[in-house]
Image (cartoon, rainbow, N blue to C red; front, side, top):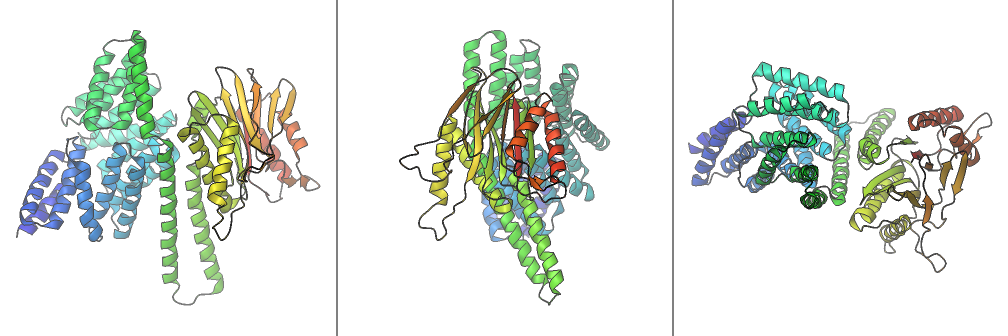
Length: 615
């Protein structure tokens, strides 16, 4: 029967998709032709999945997304099919490749869930790997490594060593992006050894690329160039366009730094490949590299043109709404996961159990869900690498009272200005955490979508949005929660800081003096009345060495000491003055010691957040 022949072709194509991509591509094409002739819908779905996947891996110009979405229609009607999970996470992979991280995360998470339900280990490993890649694109490297390591463990367990080598490469790359170079070299070497042992001609070029980019970051240009050329040589057997793209981009950037005019040959070749593949994240990176090249050659007009294109493309790919959508998608996934766990719990408790066992298990499930919520909340906090770039001398002392926190810190850059805030949402725990996500979203909207730059006007926007969304009159229960915060903006070129605050003051230290700048007291989220028309914008001229402290009320409100009294603001200011001459990391350590010694055995009463910035 034709159906059996088609099923055999599709199964063979799936087995060969990484081992012999050209052969798998041809088998998928044959299966598709045969299936369409006899209207065999299952065969068409699997053939399009295989054909699209191999086209993507071989960098062929096909209607990849269209074919995968067509396959998905069949699998959604037949969710027990093994191809359902693969179709979902490959859709996620294609969307990620084109810079659509929202859809990428959505499809990968759904693919992971389906793979878990069907017990498909290989598909679980693949889905986790793409999820890690999306986290990496968003600079959340800890989450990326966590997902990559889960993927590696699964792949090693099922003895899929080519895929395991790929996981080692991805882990190494994430460590490199975190500037943990020893760990990065360790994992790249593990990948290189494994791929050489297997004679993995398709994977070796990627390990060389990883090592090259790592040495490039370490400013060891000789080793970087050697590894890029080793990758190009190894890739000559498979002709992977994506591999050539990364090699030419890397070589072009290095030769630009070395002021070599041949850099333009590599950069233009890389841009041609990136445009052919439609790889937006790499297209905007290439525009930045070309801007740097023309600046090096003195052609400032061309440099400016490419730099403008870089910013335009970057905003398209990494706009703030994409970040917010992904966070909402993660929340939906967490809720669905919790609901599923609740259903399993009910099934397991058909028989009567002792009350103690029931309470213990419920408590475990609740705690597990809250810990999962902590992972979600962490995504709104700016990455350490980003903060260090924008605020080179800083510390953040952050100590949630419970697992999740109502306090959060916010650091962003827009049009050359640096913004940072310490925010204390009403409550702590889960309610406070939900408010923190809402507040973070509104701050990002004000800055990135509405281009509001004055701190006072950002607070005005934040207050109006909270009032609009949480004080709806047609709601049965009007939410009265809000937030206290201090928001700063630094213009390094003019050496001026502007700030606005609600309830929480700003402490400013210069030489041996600490100055308290008082905040407004009008609550965020309350509609403005005739007497209050908006928050105050304050301005401070800056000097090198000035210290800025912003914080929530958790530290001064903590009970402790011999009399179990509050720490109080006066004592808090004295501590800040005492530690002002220490380095910023040492100031953080000292604050931790003071807080723990004061608290002793007393329960922590609130979330604690202190940010210090030295100009």
